[in-house]
Figure 1 (spheres, rainbow, N blue to C red):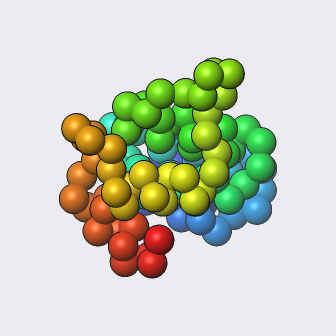
Figure 2 (tube, helix red, strand yellow):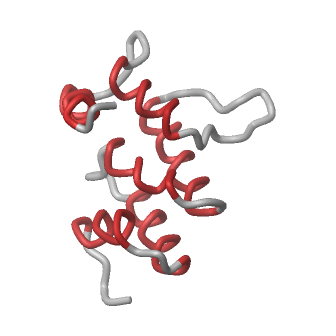
Length: 105
């Protein structure tokens, strides 16, 4: 894959089916301070390491604790609700909530 930029990583996560490219894009977005929670939702559509990377980044961004088994929540429905409603005192942005509403989630 060519050099990743934020925009390319978002596109790859939404459009690619190549596991190596998806894992690289998810890792890039998970580490990029410019990433928004709603950009990582596409990573939850892919099984395994890609969904895990996206979920861990979402846990960190939203300050949502891991499950009692210390596993990340990889349910897209959970995160769509979380972004739309936002937990009390969360750091979720109005942009994230607006983006979730616009997608009909």
